[in-house]
Amino acid sequence: MTIHFFNGFTCNARLPASWHTGQLCLLLETRQGLVLVDTGLGRADYVHQPGILHTFKVVTTVPLNPGEAAVCQVARLGYRPEDVRHVVLTHMHFDHCGGLPDFPHARVHVHRRELQAFTGRRRRWTDWAYVRRHVAHRPEFQLYDDAGERWFDLPAIPLPFEPEMWLVPLFGHTRGHCGVAVHTGSGWLFHVGDAAPVGFTESVPRWLARLVTGPHVPRLRAFQAAHPGIRLTTGHMWLDFFDDAVCFREGPAR
Ligand SMILES: [Zn+2]
Image (cartoon, rainbow, N blue to C red; front, side, top):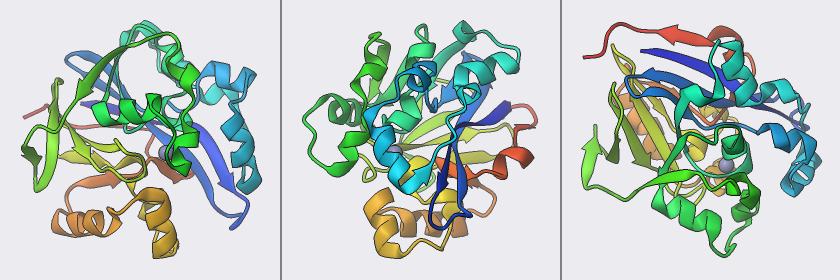
């Protein structure tokens, strides 16, 4: 399967100033058509910046380059927006689903608990990163509940794509946050979304990592150690990741 990686939202920390990150979007060529995992910001977000972005600007610098909108990057790869048939969301924070309105034909796959958190009463600080207008176009949702199945040793929910994909509940960063596992043809890619800090960096104090990303970092590190052949990615990656890993192709699916 061919997997395109791109950065849907550059966000650089003010402290440490060397922390330059991009929000990782995956574009997968599956038998069911193009599947986009997370969208970054949408075109409208550059015109009418969501209020949360102003809060973000206190601790980060955000260059806000409209060319980073997923719909522009999909076009650069030679596809039309309507070729993206499905969007899978790790969670619905503005920097992961802001691009939904740019793909109005896509079916949106997300854990039921995440949509409930998005539409429900705001109960915790991370809920303020939900921007309701991102679903004002009323996309068709396909919602998932825990299925009692496992991907390796993690509880997981099968997604309806070939090659095989799984939604892996990692609740904590948000109430319905999930990782996404993808069979690449010759191995597995496990995108853990915002359940771990940028590129699994160890330089974030543990209490802070837990506060921001939720409780799964120790578990994910253990998973990584137990399965060294599985490639793990996080929702935000160091900017240079996108220079080296823009696209990779692997052999035919099992
Ligand atoms: Zn988030």
